[in-house]
Length: 379
Image (cartoon, rainbow, N blue to C red; front, side):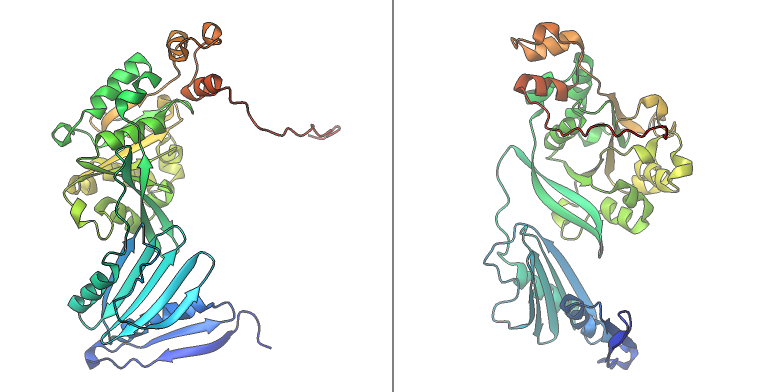
């Protein structure tokens, strides 16, 4: 028997292309770790790798209908893989090949290779026509993108996120902070001076809620995208460029500003960031007011639990920040006003929004505390 990591089979595809000048040597290897999905990847790319179909198009979809075939009408499936959370198919047509993957969360990816770019685009259009459910029309939600680095590069998923209107939640913030947020919510493109929004303060003070309300207040001119892995974003220039430039299929949003939201991004902006995170801080600053930032209409919103004095001075430099807000606890008087006629209102001291909500709703914690272990004389 061969070793586990020894190739079991070598697949070599003929490199002959329609034009000999396009011919390139190409091969792929299957070993004992390979799966049917790996083979489907090879088959889907074989014509492109050989140069027979040198044009490639890709489209990401959300809210895919359950009955959408994700292939052109009248086409025949050549390969199909059904797994617990996904369905993948390969379809071969005259001068084109299509690979589509759909997942249980209703998202999908369509990839097409073809002998011409026009044919590739036509096959994509036929495949995705009427494939998606209508976007939600709920006024209380905003379409927000979510970026992350996956196995096949940077990915953006679009989800409808429930967002409050600013007047509904204004009372959750202290008087000074609420006034500053009033001005921030009312900003429009002509008012933009800096490119960085910095929200700092203790956990539970409402920084994320404020950002959700901001996404709704700016929704008519700015697309909000949340980056789930900000350290990776600034470690990989290709990922950063895709997030700053926008994802495929966003032509309808090309003239809109983009707000990249980075939550709890302490590692990138603390005082020692230059030495501990490599080029991450430099790329963040370049995105906000360097060459990259000036070439794109991109804003960056960062929330952090760090105290302002512990942040890198380059982050808080005058002129760089569009807004710099410390969202702290409510004072005792503000907390009592927030609680209203609640029985505990008279004895409350300064508190975070999260603490007040828990007190108002009577939410007790669910926890298991282990008995301390006697370590004897050893620490």
